Length: 288
Length: 227
Image 1 (tube, each protein chain N blue to C red):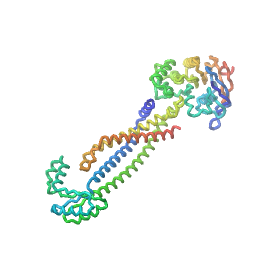
Image 2: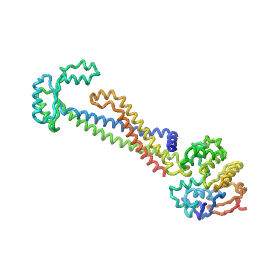
Image 3: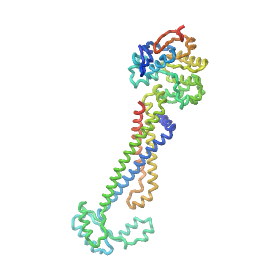
Image 4: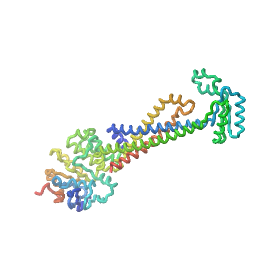
């Protein structure tokens, strides 16, 4: 308790240094939070696309039901198809309606005629996708063949890149924070040299002198983590409508409050480790 | 209780602080350490609290060999010895109460015991009314009393006072010395470094005189200067 009181006094007596330390840590944890959102969000997007059929084929308006049934039978006959489902124009309209039930204007504009009927296909082996796709593309009444596989591989490579950039940025900012914290705590130790000398002459042990500085490092770091997390959550909340309209049906938003709390907990743990490490380095360096 | 045996202290550029000094002190003694500025009084006191180590010789306080005392035991030694520093070493950004309670906090004594003990000492040295004032708001004599209270708050066996009457008027000096005599009567060993000849001559206590780092006199009922 005494250590915490001393820590608070140190912070109160040099507020600008305290602010600088918290601000530096805030930047690091802000970036940690943002990249966590990006990485977890993109993982959810990938999962969504992985849950979709492997191939979707849309038919031209003039395609007749017999032609579609013939193509379906032909594909089933190859033995390469694990699952195949026909989606009629009416079913497509129903899906569209359920997806846009909150927007009456969109519902009024669309009828079953303008939506294409389709086949959703999953193959037994992923390598059969190409031959199935070729068969489909050769049909005259096929309008478009969509491969979610391409989307997934693109997304995966983007996510991997984001993950690598995020990790590199976090490492650089983390190191920056540690070095700056060492300097700030070092300045504080230098400012209190006389007080430290007097405490030692009065019988203070090394750890009695060290603990308030170590708590100070943890305090700044945890403060930075809370502010950085808070700012990133505010930005997420502010951008929520924009992101929701961009992502459409992909179930990423809203972000669960439990996830945000878990993120805060993990960041606080990281903050304690960073703060303790940097202030301990400062103490070893300046309190010989 | 204290045994200083053939102690010498040489500083960085070869300057001698103390040369072959030996003496011993019994429990409950009151000793004046006299000598001109630079004679080695403060150096000797610094060696007794292990703020510095002797270049040669040994120092024992009870069973503790200060030369061989491990670093982690130094705080224990310092809690046994109260020190009134020449420059007082009061923390200017803390109140008088906070300064006096500091050694108790350092020793791990928590409120309300620490508060009670600090207030007792403030009462004893007569500065209770200045409890929440800062050092800058007190006179020289009051600051000296605050430094004495801080030195005594852990009930030390030994009290080292480095020129506690320096820069004080004669009346305040006498009050401070009276306070130190009271403390000594209660069993605390007191070693007081001083330039104040009147006080030394008036009290006729043991006098250890240093000159240019050498012990030149050790008299049971001594005077400031050889008559």
